[in-house]
Every structure is written in structure tokens, then in C-alpha cells.
Image (cartoon, rainbow, N blue to C red):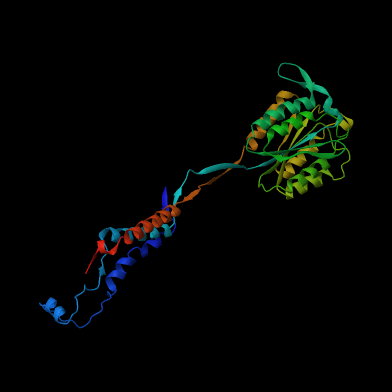
Length: 327
């Protein structure tokens, strides 16, 4: 698509015609006598007649070249541009944080796959989360792990390959045997501090209850709610277990309720997959599409053409006057 950025420049186009039309041509008058016997007078006075002043006339070619130069100059001043193919790219519409429990109980081999094989809780999480990440191509995803303390494993990124590689390397107990849920939420909030996304979602997965976080779980959830961070909670393992490995379903329900999220329970791999499928529906992939149409300026082409025309005109005007003049 072709467009002029300053079309009002064409107002100057008829200026040469107006100048020619309204300005008076230069004329110089003087006394003169016209006689039919000029040669005889010259002989008697011993003077030879000479030609009158030479008047240079402009050819039609010169006039057309002048108009062409003027038109090219005005077109250049009007800033012609050519719209090129639009460039479209997609920005992440959501920052999604995975908060994974790495307490010692996550190595318990009690999760059954669809083919009946028993795998550890953490292996089940890795398997399902990798599939979940593959479905979130446009979301920036981060990873945090916790045990005795909480640690950022992967900052928010669109490089999901690296995320899955680092997730595959985590092992049960590597963050300590305890379950510091409140501290894990606090770490998640710090990771969200640098986020510019308006959609901030965390998925907290644990198989136990909080065992002495420095930040109380309810307070952490309230702060998350105040910062518009939605937390979905997933409890996995045996709900009948007791002691430090007991699931505090009520606490996880409260975290989700305070932040506007949902609470889930997964007892095997199939249920865990269903949970992440439900999360896909609750938090659909969000994409912000941005388009930009680059403009290619064309005025230089017209300026170059004008300069070329001026050079041609000057060459023509340098032709010997005797070949294009009258007396």
C-alpha cells in the first residue's frame, strides 16, 4: 500500500505556474530608428552595422524538464512511503509458577500409571507436568521447589525445554525433608515481583502439611490475594495419612479460596492428569498478539530522480547559444 505522509505538500505544486502568470517579464526599452538604407549610412559614416542583443529562448524540452524537477521535488516533500508486510509476534499473556514439594515423602512409590505400574509421587508429577507445560506454549512458566526451605529453580521463561530439563533433575529430599508451604508461597510472591503480566497464577503441589514455615500459610495466602496472584492447590498422596506426612486438605482449600483458585486432590497418575486438564480449562492459554507494519520511505528515490533531471537540464542549457538563440 502506497501513501503520502505529508499530502499537504502538493499545495505547492502549481507555484511555478502562478509565478509565471502573475510576475511581469523583464523588458528594457530605448530609442531606435528604423531605416531602409542602413548599409549606406554605415558606408558614409565609416561604421559597420552589428547584430542586436541575443535573446536566449527556452525550448519545450527545457520547460518540461523544469516542470519535471519541480514535480519530483514536491513528491519528495510529501514523504511517500510504502507499507510492507505486517510483522506479527505474540507476547506471553500469563506468568505461571509451578511450586513443587520435594520433601522426603515425595519418593513414596504409590502412584499407579494407566498400565498399572507403580512410580514415585515425584516421577508422576514430572510426567504430568511436562505434558502440561507442552500445552502452554505462550505462557511464561517458572519453577520453584521447597522442602526445609524454598528455592527458585527456573525464573519465568518461554524456554520450556530448559524448564523441563531442570524439572527432570530435581529429586526428593534435595531441599530437605520438611514441608514449608508458607515459605514456598512467600518465595513465589518474590518471583512475581518482577512480573509485568496482569495474569499471575501459581500451582502449588504438595503431599504433606506445613511443618513450621517462617511465614504462616494463611498470611502468605492473604498477601498473594492482595497482589492478585491466584493459587491453585493440588494435594497428592493418602488423605488418611497421619503425622508430618498427613495432608492438610483444609489448609490447602483455604489457600485456594483466599486467592480465587481451586483446590484438587490426586490419588494416582490418572487423577493427577485430570487435575492438570481441569487447570487448562480454568486458566486457558492466554496470548497477546502485537502487530507492526514497517514503512519503507520512498522520498529519496524522487530526490535522486530530481537531481538527475537537474543535471540533464544543466547539460542541455550549456549547449552553445548560437545553436539555440535568436537575435
